[in-house]
Length: 404
Image (cartoon, rainbow, N blue to C red):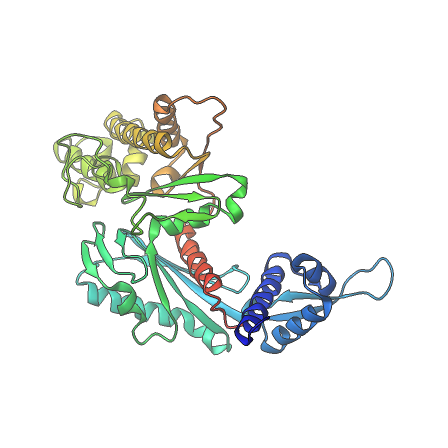
């Protein structure tokens, strides 16, 4: 016998099933919704009536009918609510605002600047988010929350930045500080986890497991199994950049020596080029930075290599080899059927990607029937911000916290 609580939970589950069906398959008629959700037509009519009244769905008119009365077609209302996704990169902040259909309604990018002290940076970020959402609040739409993608070790649930070598932060309660005085919840996640969630696509795009590596200012990774992120026992999975690949190698910001990030990241490439330019003033690398090595960035090294600078080619070749070796280790341990390479480093032409893949293929253990697809990311520079939105929405669905 159902208790009152059981009935309320069942009614809520039915409402979520109907709304989810409309999000995924709309425009759709009530009879089709009933068929997809295994609910009765009267139940679907009652639920859709409530959702229409609350503004979460709307009618778009009559659909086609082979015989009989044309059915009324329904779809989710895009501006019923919005989510904000923020990607905090060491060189750039990228922000997106997504509508209820997870379509991007707005995007913004600006330089990260100095992240010290953290309180000042967080205050600036809070003002930026509030400024961006004002136009959406004016139209009367609800802001569900903000998802923040942050590099480093993030404590699951609390959103405390335990250690972010890129930002130089330790034990910073970012989620708590951002949420203070905000009119909506804030959720902080690791940026590589957010990136992987978005690059994985819907239901894994048919792949059983995807390993996604982010090659930019730093290096990080994440594993997605089906459409579920593997976050590890404490939410700290994917720190491939801090696996040691060179004994007694350069000191890494994390405190270890010889980390993959210390020898092959965008920052490491720029650092090696700066040392080269300081001693070879007539090199192409020195020319591109105007004779000031401090201005050198990784993209200039790619430009120099493209122009035939052998020193630049060597720097990039060594970095690509290290990355390929690191990826081969991940593949040998995790056995994914897809590897996605993302980030600024792999946007600089095919040669770098090809060198990484060649080195990875050389060290991956052969296995009968293995079909490993290695590819570039396809979701664009706002992918991690989109992933932060996706993680936020997923949490609302899991906790049945949508305001429907």
